[in-house]
Amino acid sequence: MHLRIPLLAALVALAGCANDGSIDPSRIGKRRVERAAAFAELPADQQALVEKGQIKVGMVPDAIYIAWGPAAQVLQSGDASGETTTWLYQGTTTDDYLSWNYREVVRKDGTTYLDRYMDRDINLRTYISAELMFRGGVLASWKMLPKPPSQTIFAPVPTLR
Image (tube, rainbow, N blue to C red; front, side, top):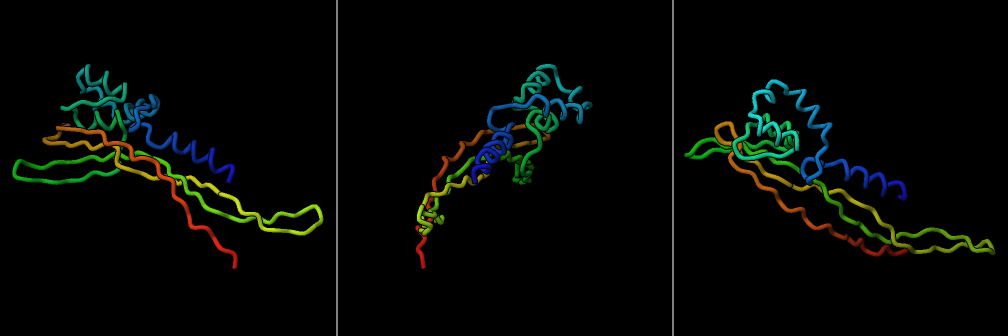
């Protein structure tokens, strides 16, 4: 239990770097090398934005990929005005799960009793953090979505039988 909290905190810190405002330059560099030809074709102002992990309307999907990484989901839709590709990015938040547990305690005289205590687990929950819409092969619109509030979930009190 005690090792889980620091481990989960580390996972949360690593999970969603491109979506929460913190940008890992080494990941951008790796994606830039992976798509070097596409990066070289970008205008200088877009290259500068991509290097900082920023996007703007009019960018091609390769520029977005280099800046933010792969989307969690890619959706296709269409209407009378044409086809739309939507990229969804995910973030991660945590919820506390509180439950009552019992542990056996030994008294000084050797007898035992059950001691009730509150146990805490942290549950990771993903959510959609950004929605990007492409039309005609370029970014037509984008929006950041709010992080949902963390929740505290209380388990029912167990009964001894």
